Amino acid sequence: MVNFFYKLKSLLNKYWWLTPLLFFLLWRISIEIVARLANFYLTPPINPWPWEQQAPLLARWDSGWYASIVDHSYWFKTDAMSNVTFFPLYPLLWKITKLVTNLRSLLAGVVIANAMALLFSLVFWRWLDQKYSRLTANYSLITLLAFPTSFFMVSAYSESTLLLLSALTF
Image (cartoon, rainbow, N blue to C red; front, side):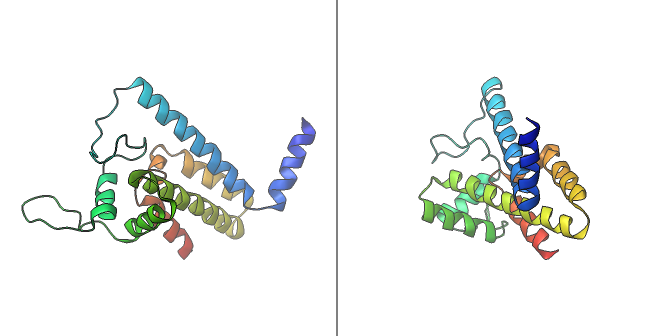
């Protein structure tokens, strides 16, 4: 058993990207478990997106506005709510993902959000590792991922894209 941990430690030291990838995967698995348990034990939410048979667990609230931009483009109505208040980069990435992978609309949004969150984790950890130390990078990424509202990063929202672009500026 000690040999396994020694080999794991040497692998993590050799390939810098394995540490944030491992943290991300463990966090993503725990988010999925909590979401499925909540969906099982709590009253299932009403599916607000009539064009989807069953919305993914992490596609609620504003995800429908982003999906309406992807599926029906921007529109403006003076007497009703409109989707013009949402910035275009995330819906553009969502649309490209949907066209390339041929996934359902909301599922494509979750996929692109997860990809952006993974890239953010890698960039953020690498920046902290180079600027401060590996221990600081590890604690910072674990703290960020353990924060209670961190599930928004893998939900069909633009937060992971914003965080990735912010981390890239550093």
